Length: 111
Length: 118
Image 1 (spheres, chains in turn cyan, yellow):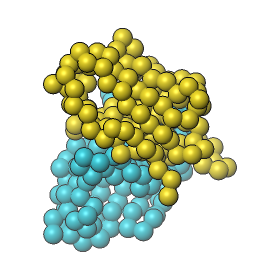
Image 2 (cartoon, one colour):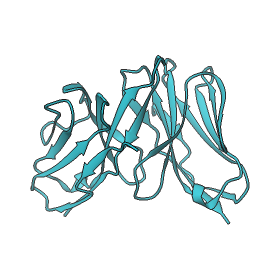
Image 3 (cartoon, each protein chain N blue to C red):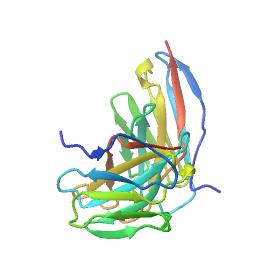
Image 4 (cartoon, rainbow over the protein chains, first blue to last red):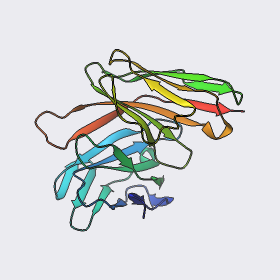
């Protein structure tokens, strides 16, 4: 079992719709969770970080964490073509452990 | 806005040659990371520094890769000799603990160095 798993996609949604990106992780003691966006040929950029169970909202983005189910998701409301990118889920045990990245999910927002 | 700097941005080399990449983290960030990202995959940690000390290099192919951060600021990653399978994006990132948050730490990535080994 891989440590961090994501659907590779591609996930296609029409402009204005909600895009839902999912991620599961295997290490139950993980404490920190991150979503990065990566445009083709560019480096990852942090969108959201979440540490506690529940929802965390930032603009059009909502991260959801369920530690009991070892599941973290990212919702993008009112999707725009500029949201088309690969979204990387990343998980960390403690501040001193390494970050484990998932393989990423490719999102395409169709105008 | 502070950024992580990397150079070169692109490197083409022939197999068996030596290559070196440089990274300058965000000022004040004690933790520095080197990642390798193969097309279609997530970044894989090669080495992590805390100041000038190596914290994790378990995935670094030590027969050909080396990394140093002598003064605890900028860092160099070297490959000698390069192999065809080393073609990838090499990403540097830095982080500092989020104030008052246990278990919280975000990484900021540089633009990366795209390596092509022929």
